[in-house]
Image 1 (cartoon, rainbow, N blue to C red):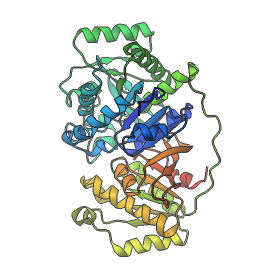
Image 2: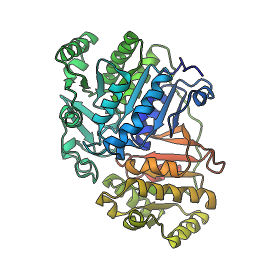
Image 3: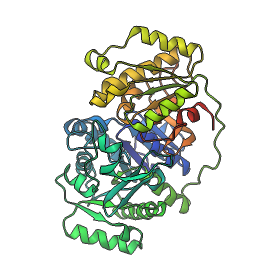
Image 4: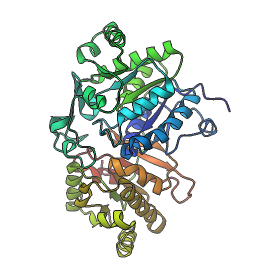
Length: 440
């Protein structure tokens, strides 16, 4: 089958929660968008009428560079063959990565190998989520969709102590420079907020200096639109797929740019969403933001079951009595939080914990008829989604910016149509779980 000529954008997310974040922004702009768990074939894309954006919710955030390369090279090659105007490697807006785990530098290297563009643009900020990049340094609000304070990344109360990839460097040019041998440079906020000529002149100067990874600052939403307009002009000039790296600000910027150029019309109304009873929350998040949400939900009627995370990682087993208790509580229509507790901060296996949580979620649907599930935690989310037999999701409605309510597509008839919300650790205020239940 011939590659599609209608795909404007394909993105590959490094985890599931971040991928639904990107899905939300491009869907809001009016794209017909679907998020897959594996890189789709031409036949799968052709089977969806009107599709112009698709994503892949990967798991590279938790992998070593060698493991990433084995996955990303063939995925990028397949995306390139589908003929998208843009391919975006979507990372967390706090650039969670290191030289040994989830290396964004390795993703840049893989993208450069496949797409062979003159340089790789990297968007540093995402103001709509409380992430700001100024003179190369990334600042992040404590909690997305909350009124939390803003911290430089290496001083952030949560990200600086992340158990897997603690943020020890806020300068993105230095962070990426430690993960790739490619020369990294900066298009600072004074250039980004200026004219297109200012940006182009800065790019030309860096390219003349043999710089091949360009980090772009972003302080305001309009900065992302300027960046997106710049990217789209490059893609048009190349007449080939343009590869970029960054947060969902790329989807937001491109979506706004395409709306202004008449390629898309924004969604103004969403179908009503009913209250879910019971709501199951499965969480592998180690964020203090999620911890506050758990405590608030417990104070407002949710019940709690804490898994033995160490035992799960040691011998791949779940407590049979706890499983029976989970099903029993859900059958009684009790709202329930199942989470991995404080021991998750020991840098335990994201794959084992996520798979266990996803298995519990699937059992909740099969045995207790649960219709809506909230999955919390970026590192574990991709494994949970696969254990739930999710093939793809589409956005149903916005909840909190960056974490939409979605509908599941699955070859397992029992899972097909399930409503699911994937939440990164930093997303939401204290009342978040109640909001997902339907109290908004």
